[in-house]
Image (tube, rainbow, N blue to C red; front, side, top):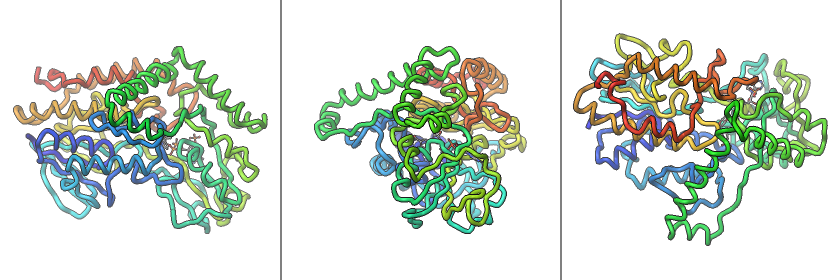
Length: 473
Ligand code: N01
């Protein structure tokens, strides 16, 4: 089997490592820049961090877990699940922690991988599992550096800074802020939530699993499989259509969101400020039961005035001792800042100047034997990204024997062009450019994040490599 370098030990990189391990090949190395595994679930430790996809679906299909304590467990449980997977499948010895890959160059036959420490090693195949939400985005606001209080990004939570009795400014109101604002509002003296664009929010059907539930899942595995299948089919059938221009469920989901807002926010003036003016689904829909009630607290204010500057004492004319940037991630520069050089000295950053793209979101012309997990146009607005990652890993596993037999595998430019046209046609059916800006888009407004089809279609398209696309027909 070809040797494989995997970058990143989050859901994607670990899945790749486990599948290689299960296939009985130990010729892989996982490079992880942080001191531990877990990716986004290691980084996002803010109070209330969790996932908006039920864990019975947001987990590996080959490693179902019967003991989730609730439908939507929080970050510690998800991280513990990943750690258990790494232990159970014995991949830890092949993970190099605190080892950042800074460059990878295709030599004509193999990938030469360089780490920040200056070590260089060669592998046949390079798999990038760095994800789309791994580098915090900090805004560029005048005066930011002059602030004399404590400031941090939500994905780099400062647990040493007690928020009790503080005057806190939260900048941003996406999924992260929606989860931690209800946790900090009861202890802070005041929370000013700076909202640039309101989000659509629908109820989160969360519930705990009782012991009988958990035992049933453990001892009646068909029940757990059926439950997982039911969640999958429900989100696919109800929420995917809501993201389509003519989707049948958009009105239904919008109605849910408006009712949720009416039920939870009695003040019409605040309700008006929280009502989005763009089509539902254009930005990520939030699933949350605690965010709106937190915003109605007397010590919380939703501030919609644009932020003009940050002073040493707070945001604009207000005084704060803490600023929390819930301002999202650098999502469109996939793989940055790793310098990836393919055939004939081509760099990935150069090739993707007008927007990242990859055939099936996995392979890239001019970059033989490079495979991406959770790459361009494979993010979802409605279902489990772990499902997409498993499709990609299965595809890569199916490519490896071909590489072993025939040498480097490179997707043809015409296959990439045909894929792009297909994506663009499908993208025209979706709502992600209908009156909003979001992290799904790059700086030019092109949607480089999301997959515009059903996940069932993606699974079908990635079931096995079409060898003609690689010039091996
Ligand atoms: O980040 P975001 P996030 N001045 O990019 C605002 C996943 N996730 O960390 O909307 C003022 O959504 C920005 O404003 P606007 C999930 O996929 C999932 O919250 O651009 N504001 C926005 O409000 C999610 O989508 C879960 O106008 C500025 C916010 O910052 C993704 O991660 C939990 C600004 C950024 O929101 C990212 O979520 C957490 C500026 N200069 C995360 N710049 C769950 O599963 C940015 N903003 C529940």
